[in-house]
Amino acid sequence: MRTIMIMLDTLNRRALSAYGGEGVRTPNIDRLAEQSVVFDQHWSGSLPCMPARRDMLTGRAAFLEKGWGGIEPFDRTLPAALREDGVFSHIVTDHYHYFATGGENYCQSFSTWDFHRGQEDDPWVSSIKDLPAPERYYGQVRAQCEKNRTQFLREEDYPGPRTIQAACGWLEKNGREDRYFLTVEAFDPHEPFDTPDHYLQMYQDSYEGPAYSWPKYGTVDVPPEALAHIQKRYAATLTMIDHWLGKLLDTMERLDILDDTLVIFTTDHGLLLGEHEQTGKNVMHVYNELANIPLMIRLPEGRAAGTRIQALTQNIDLMPTILDYMGASIPETVQGASLRGLLEGTQEKVREAALYGYHGMCVNVTDGRYTYMRAPVSKDNYPCYAYTAMPTTFRSYLGRVAPERIEAGRFLPYTAYPVFKIPESTQGVTYARNQFVMETRLYDLARDEHQEHPLQDDEAEARMIELLVAGMKQAGAPEEQYVRLGLLEKE
Image (cartoon, rainbow, N blue to C red; front, side, top):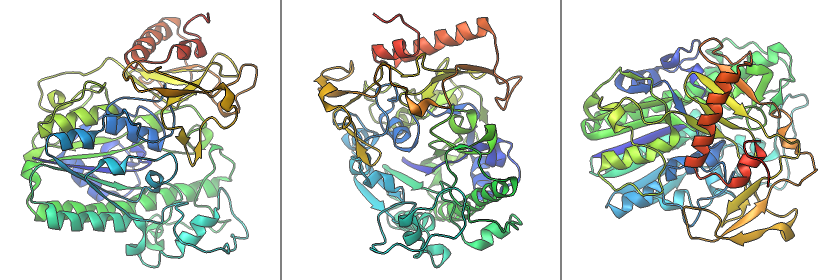
């Protein structure tokens, strides 16, 4: 028995025909969907990139206690659990955040790893002198990214295609072996949307305005023709990586390994490209374009192909599912549920609700019918703390602003490991990151699929609050989170 998990970054399911999307060419994702069980109510947990990966590798959502950061010394990871049962694991990736400050110990938990450089701001091409920026541009232009782009002379030179080629090579050498877990992870279609011109030409792009391949995060600030252009660039980048995904599927079929292989296809989160008058992620409410993500699972021998599952599932369910199918023990720290019962028709649901969000922002919950976004009750977002034994975050360190306020102790209920309790808000000081998310919102997806009209319904809100509190308790939320969200009177 083998498991191969394929993950693209920043994949909006509304771009996929398997989820009703139109206008984006993804024949190989379509091909995989036809062979797979497709999950319609699959949700992220912690956002964005690294928090989502920690969820997937540990089987528990951590955004209530910590944001972006490394695997903690007390985390029980999927590769480590597999290794204890004699299963070899390997990851092929171009996701450079794994190798920056705040991305520690993810790849290193695998038996072996293979990193392909050059995405985004990866400090790869070394040149003291910066390249000249475009004379006119929208969005973002970053010096290191411009340097890296000089190495993309052919399609095969782009990091995404190199990653897939390396995965195919690994399978050529090892694919027919038994009991391994392979993760194939491409950063595409994450911004900046870099792709050879012939993919963009597929979408009849005639844009002649300022350069625009990397949107800013926040309210749309470009004219309609530029927004249409960036949407086409996203589609073109997705079509490119889909083309190379086809080569990976071809390799698996040629090696004749699919009868005894579990294949999982998913993403970490989506992206806004004009929906809700926003572009990007991180600074706005976690709309469904960001959190309701694709999941396709191809069972050995293609069993149950074409089945669609409506039960609520989350990214934390992938770890126990893989361990279940591989015959390995599931650590007691795992909060996710194996999806095997859903996949094999012996179970109707694994949860009543899904909890998701960014650390220190809204805490969100859905029951599949409603989505509820609970905002902080105070502009200072107080009290909010991060709990970690490794105080790194996105290319930086936690606690630098007020180190004298940091405490240390055994604050987490699921480990005796001492951690730092690091303040992330100050009473009376406005929390700027919440500029878009200081309003609690409720949406009825049955009547408002695109979350355009916030709902006022006291009865529905009361029920969603019950689900929210129950989910927070199950996740072991720190007590101050209830105070921050106005769910508990401050002592």
